[in-house]
Image (cartoon, rainbow, N blue to C red; front, side, top):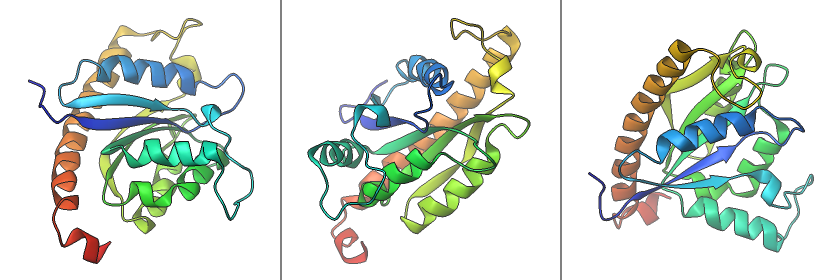
Length: 196
């Protein structure tokens, strides 16, 4: 049963690479999340914003819009590939230009890549988010050799793998919901301003 005060879940693209598999995984996750009570989904794609390569002193209108959308989120689900044992530079820039938006909020991950399934990228992202006082969820949906798991239309090749991934995602979202509700209540407490 959905609450009257739904949690805004930002599903964040971690890649802008041409031909990115991230589209397939975001679409799959969004389809699952739309049926989950308590979450109001918003998808955030860095391609929709003029995220600068440098770090300007004054944010552009596009970056302000990005920061505003991230600030409104109660929780985050970041879909990240692993590039050369790490996460993409565009994801770091999105995090850096909007650092206050992540504070005291939970972050979960869907990762994908080769043999590690993107887990090395996630481990590095945990360090970044810890610095921002965000809480990363232990449960990760990790897709090993992700390029082989989907057909040309973005559908899972194996029903068994699809079912397993959906089960992991539902478990992850249950944990994310608990953290989001708890941290949202905590951010409303008067002492939050003093510690933030």
